[in-house]
Length: 256
Length: 301
Image (cartoon, each protein chain N blue to C red):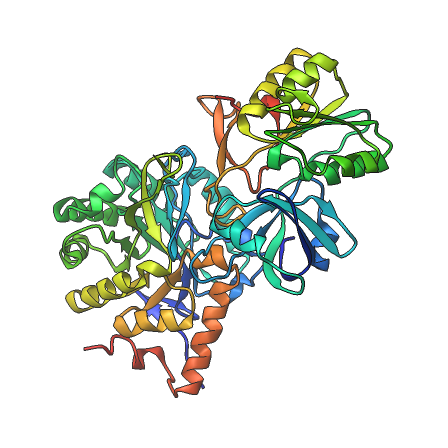
């Protein structure tokens, strides 16, 4: 059951260049939110009509925390929200991660890091041993919060400014990190190489995908990715990121 | 007492508000938000003879006051539709209009054959989708081809046949007349306007297919003008669409000559838009003493 809600901005902090951290009071969406889901936020400025899908970083009793990057006009508008402002949201959208028992390795790249925070907290609360690998171009954000939650944290940066110099997959190989289940969100290229590694090491991997979308509820059929499908003559089908995903079993994704 | 009922080819709708094909699925996704019983009709997403995969992503681009799509009529096929969506929609007191798509006359015929005897109310022939390379809009831009495909489908249709027109022509009344002479019982217009958006930082089109169909409030004046022109040119009922977001927009189309009105992109902007439009039309009628929509339909000379 999805709902629309008028969410009130409780705080807005700039975490790093172009990265904003907003806490929204939205009791109805907060009550149903799962790790790895997202909400749709409407710009409501009369010009930009479509809602922006933004991942859920943390779930409070009546609040949702979102951490997002300014990538266009909608997110630029949201970056200017101030305490007390309200925004129209729709949620909660998507399937979220299927949280398994046993040890967990969480791998995030850039703006794919935020949804892993709620995921880590829920896995730790359920008794899982959680290791987190975070990749950034330069610098880092949210890493201290993963530590506070009780996760073991590794950081990789392209420029070596923080932690390991290189990408997350190389870091995972060099530290020989393994787990019963791997959960990931990040750029497609990162997910693809992580999928190759996890397949070699026989680790189940759940990947959260991204695509341009209009409705967020499965009606417009805009946000599709190629997913293996044995019932189709050519072995694949277009599945919707917003409804069938955003989280898919990496073995089902047609990596190109 | 106001009467919002409208009659389209003998099918009585409780009100003129419908959903534009391809923006509402078969209504399932919107039943979390609205009561589907409130709608005059649900026009379902295009149904083909066999499952269609549609175009590669990105399929969506936002533009000023609207959007582009290049979905390409992805759908699970007519057999799946009959088995799953007709029973779902029949739970509600609303009319079912099935949008029919094909790459060839034969494919359109195959869908309509399979829909014979099914529990639906009307058919809408899609000869106007800009996002498929064969069929679709190519049938809707040539009067002779339009007339032929309508004629072929009309022979097999056991329900009233609406023909959906493309605005991507020099003179829409020419195609409208051709569709009517082929046997169209009603016309719906407009489908999307072809458009393009370029990402100047990546130096590439936003849509994978480069060109897509534009919809949303920005296209509304074009749609109102075309509905007005077609209403003056033919004698069949018209279902108007193109940027309708609310009751004021819907009433413009009715005054231009439309019997029914469809909301499309507005469903993505506000999932309650259809029901709000129904309520807004009722409010207008009460406030301005309109007892029946026929009093204002096509009043623009």
